[in-house]
Image 1: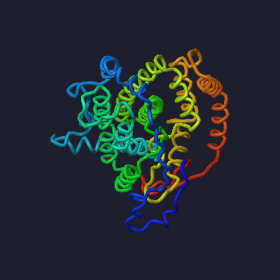
Image 2 (image 1 turned 90 degrees about the vertical axis):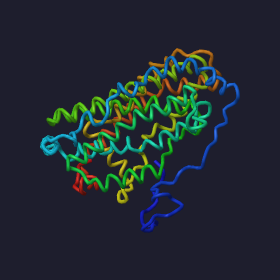
Image 3 (image 1 turned 30 degrees about the vertical axis):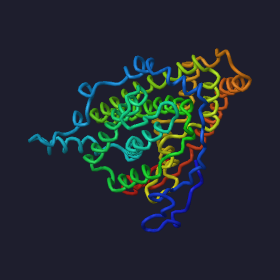
Image 4 (image 1 turned 45 degrees about the vertical axis):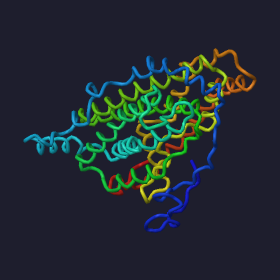
Length: 365
């Protein structure tokens, strides 16, 4: 994570050089210039993408909408439905809400993710309404993802268990700050990242569903399972794109995979900030680790899944650099195991911190 900037350097309205009180220093821009032959690969894949990627989208009329899971404000029974929702959530522990809020805020920073996809050479939406399959995917994927934050946001609001002003400020900070996932404007790096990240969100939402059911809120469990289902579809699309790139251009693909793993996959909310806690992402991640919502073991399992999915060990037609990248990837699993052990050791510490999202109540890390 980038070095923190003390909040004391920010005035009441924030430092204009750090939009919205950016709590971290961005790296200098690294520009990736994709040679013409690589651009041609993505151009040549447009028909393939239409038949193999866009099929993982759902027509709007067949999609679920947030209102399908929420009290109906037009119904005479609205207030009773809200009361029942609040009763179900009343006994859920604070630490669960910290994780659920963190997941929701991550989903709400969607404008940043669409902007990031539109920086990638060869696939960006050049006009804002382009009809290339890549552009159609970017917009439709964004539209599907948009429902996730909307639904969780409204559910949390109705629960009365969280400080919505602090949550709303956090969302504004995060969107204003952006993110730095180090994919440059390289679609190979970008699709490695999205493949990894969609599987991570599938795991995280699946585990919040499991815990919600354990705590007795079946409707919240259904919400989280439904969102996880979307993430799984999107994961399938992105991993399929990379599978095709490994087939057509194994050398660039394996080097991109090694590049991203060397830098480590940062979560999209790694610059999350609430105006108070500059280590908020680290604290949120520690709670998620302790509850088993998203852990170092999950990170390692995603990596192993992708190595097998893309048959990295069996790749041929590699350059010298490509073979080095392949060796690095194939030897990484034991290192991840040691990392997991260190994380588990740190998790045994009994630190507690207050979270503004839950009215500054303390939560064990």
